Length: 200
Image (cartoon, rainbow, N blue to C red; front, top):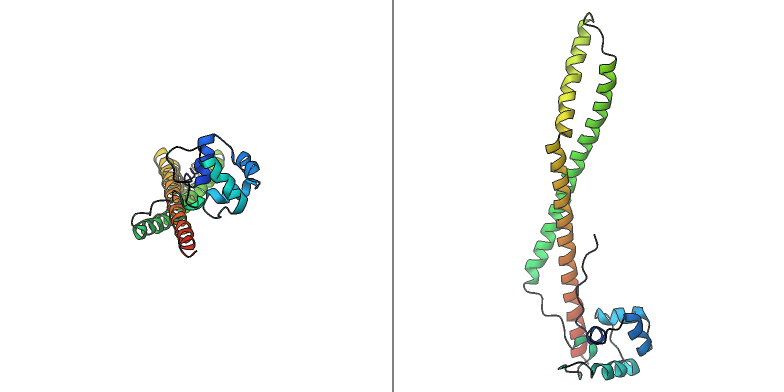
């Protein structure tokens, strides 16, 4: 399932949203490529020269906006609250998901083995010997019936539900870890851009 993108807060994105333009349309107007606009909106690149001037002219159409600042820092992302705590949570989610994935792999291996046993038991029961069989056949019978019980336990509805729930927990832990990584990465990019601007 695709993850939601974090909305851009750059001037280019604000102008585009206000005027209802696509990235391609804004790129054509500014004399850039769609990829360059995407980088500008993500804060990875600054507009310069004529493209920057054209964007500022468009920006005059936006209500109550300070257009004197550089496009990439007009509405900088707010500082991430307690980034250490978010990073710790991201690591916890990733580790827990990895641990649960190992557990799920083991459970699914057991279920696959149980399905193989079920198939074997069907064949065995179809050719089951008569009651006059020797003693070792009785031992074989007990052995196979014990395995039949084990297979049934691994394939019962509760066990199947446990595996489904485990998959969901892994999915959402991994999604949370990915979202936290993205938030922290955006913060780092934003801080670098602000630092670069302050050095000019």
